[in-house]
Length: 160
Image 1: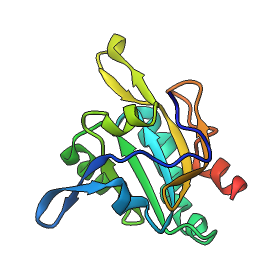
Image 2: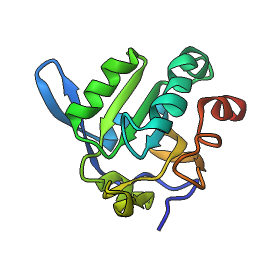
Image 3: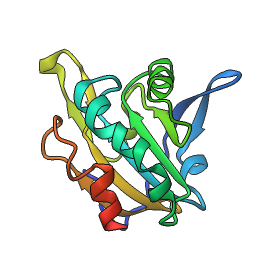
Image 4: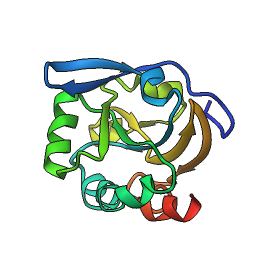
């Protein structure tokens, strides 16, 4: 069942790259006591994700944070090494890259996407949510994985 506005995020663990290598990072560590914009992509380095979705958040990071957002994070069903390479390719330290390699978080929030027919396996739907102290305050889900309109940075900025 898809998470709804007003609900608390379930407990899950992402993987993040640190100077010491990959480390776990829980939803509590990411969201507790903070106002966070979390956007999700079906896959790092895929065309819509790399050309349309991520660049808007990189470009608008300062404007988003000026609206009272503590953290901007992106999650994708990729391993931590791919997410770290994507972060380096994007050239942004303003966004936290959260690897959901087995789609545990995507499944826990009911936003998984079965892309097996395209050879991609289980992925995440494309969405953007604002989370305040672990509670979903807004949620915009794209109706097709190749679109980044409702979940893009520009649409988010208009809603903040």
